[in-house]
Image (cartoon, rainbow, N blue to C red; front, side):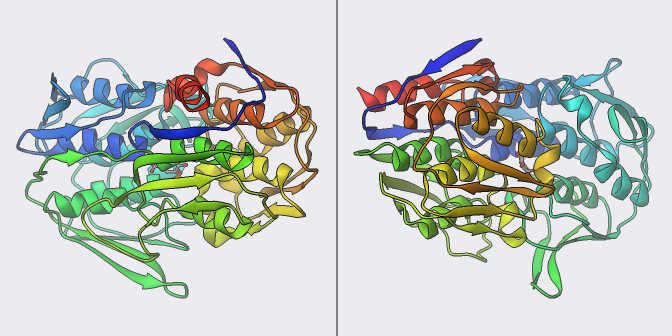
Length: 434
Ligand code: S3P
């Protein structure tokens, strides 16, 4: 589906963004592993998180909609059923990489996972390696791609050093670690910590330690059972980021986004924007915090002229899904914006270095790809044109924001990809512009 986004008048007013996708996936999965019913408020209604609900139901959990809440009646840690056919993860990388952590200790059972064309290009050896070291067996197409099968086994604890910071891989190992005496995961730089927070809230023994030299270490110990109080999902900062960028770039804008999750492992984009000189006010959580709950705040954005900045490896996991927007902002900023140490972008829903560079160039940007990032020369704005989403939700939304801020508008090819995380983006923009 093609959708046209015309240069916009100021965005003004208050909006609430869709619920956090990462936290929604985790609430459904940990709910399915729990022994008591778990009530979830504000679960994300989008394609990715529907895939997770469908998956846990196939594994034996019961999901009921009760007014504004979802109630997940789980299987308990060791009580998953093995469906005869493959579990379809759709487009959801987080589901594909977290779920095997639970499945890996369903002793004697085997589970096949498969997904869409984009999922079939995304590597799973990064989770297969630690899970096999723990004792599970994984068979994958060409050794590293879906479809793949997880054969559950008795697991032993490991100390795992992640080659690249990845919340998905860390989470997978921590979930598997729940049946071991102790399992630790060390990351070179911190990544989002929603799993740790939710496991701590669910009664699992979780510890966190470390620093830049030692690496950041998370340990989990044996849990007999999990039980969660009501989970209230905050707004998704990664979805909010598209409206924030539009608000910064479209002159005269002033908008407030209500009840957005501001866990510091997710707010790298706000820190980058502040360095660029944008005016974004929030009481985001201070860096380094760790609590069992997810902090929430309103984000207040005004348009402003912006300057170039550099984003280096240490900041990358804290803003990984917002880096395409940094490229767009770079086109409007004074100077040269650089993103490095972000090779992970190449294995997202699309190769986001290639697709962002190609897409923005087509709109008139002066942007070069690097093996692990990109460099953008600010040219005071963008012309406009057509922009291919390549089946990637964050690309579709990027093209839409570019359309609002450029000179002649943008025709986004494949706008339906936005269904994965932010189905009502165009409606939210319309409401803020009118
Ligand atoms: C996610 C982690 C990130 C992110 C993805 C969601 C998560 O991936 O890009 O959109 O929910 O854990 P990596 O952990 O692979 O960097």
